[in-house]
Image (cartoon, rainbow, N blue to C red; front, side, top):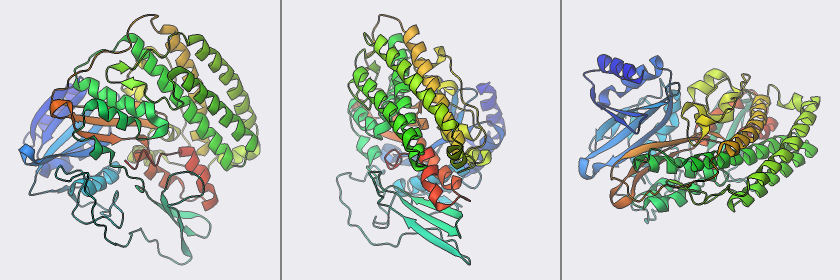
Length: 528
């Protein structure tokens, strides 16, 4: 089927396509001329059932004299990536924007403009994304000639926000520093009376330069960076990185015991994250009893995480080629007994909150995301599934042992806080069931890792998994001497922050904390 799609593209755009390269079993890279990028991407997006899951650039001026841009589409039903690749000469760093046709491209193109200095003609919003008002003009950190040790002299520019004008329209600035221990983010509300008519989120106050720090480092060292992208998605991010490295190394099959263990730990991570999210929703409707119950259960899960891996946040579990050690052996009965205790307490508490009409009244029809918005912006994870997008990387691009485990994808359509809550409730029970299956099917003996000692230079691959917040997509390009040439990180929060800004429209400002918590997006996972 994928060959038929590629042949159709070749026939439609034979004068524009320069080459087609199949790599890593399920990745297709199609080289095209830059002047035709808008036409080709529009055709793919309109005529093929796919999503734009990443868009990024590489600086290959040495020795090629070019920048490459990769437009990455996931054809979920076929389990394939179709990547449209185009080269820009270093003296002509301008290309047509695809955002007017594919709204999900918006933030990617703005990010590339900031980090590489490539401009996108016809983009509807050319303001800075990553940079703030103190960053010097014409200084682009992901170009190879930018020294990561440099400390630029900051300048003073006026911050730019969208202005909504009209009688009775007021702006409410919130942040970037918030009450509590959350990381910084500025939210600019425009309100007419009580309802919110626009919300703009300004992030990247904790931008860490992760992708730049990875350049030129040994691939084993970069794993430690991947683990520190976002503390509560440590395992998912390290796994995505390892998946890409394993593909580049040509490792076709991991030991079976390793694949099942990765599934178990991935679901342990989902459990404690979802329980924390559900507790947070209860906090924001002042349901103290329920909030305490779910927070207690989250703590149970973190204690189990520590018993299994030595870390409450599951850090230092992965390594390229598998796992650092056999984490499950001898702990099977403890894991199962803890899950049995959790399942009983969880479902009893869920029954209590669902019978509380005051609680249901707060979450129903609050923060609605329409399916069309979710599709246009590639809403992922529980946020997408709550709006009727029934996609999950564990099914669409199976990894670890998920092709051997049975589970159901929650099916909801209203896109409100209640649906996002119910998706997470159902996924908690599914995760418990999946862990039981994985432990039951796991072979009793065998290794948990294969050696990965060497990477061929200038090969690349995607690593993709279903993090607690949704689709997690990392792309790695190897360099010489086992180093990393380019590491593109796209966590689920990057996709879902724009979706949150749509979800609050028409609601009142006091409902923002509740809507925000139902997404529970990561600042650190976005502000790379």
